[in-house]
Image (spheres, helix red, strand yellow):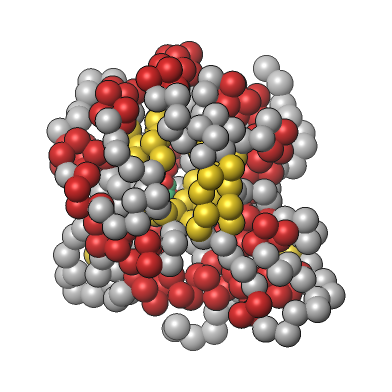
Length: 330
Ligand code: 5GP
């Protein structure tokens, strides 16, 4: 048994130091990025934020709003099998995710990127599935995950992934760390996996753990090429679910609620996700504008005229906790 004594960090363990800037307004910041993918040889341009492929937020209505801002939607898995047509708008701003059993359906997806998404991306079976998907779809932009370490990021890339999805345990409705003790602080996971991926000309998605726009900024600053959001997009008109007494249900894809909905109970598999009630927040449009404005503002603080240069302009400062004390009820 080994103990790694090196301190690993979460988003809340750091702040970004302001730096001299020549910019006079947030409007000067360009949040669009163009990514050229390693294996597919395809090019994508947009704002690299994506909705999580969860039942509640990976909806056609969310896609309509996100594509207006050139953000990406990852439809909830059940849409892959039967209603891809509902996600017609902004065809390039889609990433279809499925599990190992969905390879044939993924190969038939007619738009955007495709991806293999499992809770534990460390199995040989999963690496073989990525290879199989790459063999079937040589021209597709393929994402795969989730992992949290440089070695496995490289293995998935060498198996055929253009983009590796990073995050085990940071999700707002994830209980993996509590149930299994497995995980890795997300900021460090992003820094280490981005470094490994970029060395091979590949990309990463920072998946989970962002609770405000400052965290999204930190993920990009740490080297993320895309940031995936679940909880931050929950509770809106565009989500799947009803508003009752000012709250909406939001559940993990490995929660009891998801298992009941999709009937995928299994003797060996207990829930590793939970169901929570989130405050109803109206239109997703307002939240997205608020997020983009926060990122623009951060870029002006460090002198990054483009999101692309944010990481180069960043010096993280370790802090005890970034949570502000709130006086009174917001
Ligand atoms: P959030 O943005 O809400 O913090 O995190 C969203 C991410 O949490 C998803 O993209 C996915 O990777 C992860 N996730 C979603 N549902 C579950 C679940 O039931 N269990 C676990 N362990 N992770 C989940």
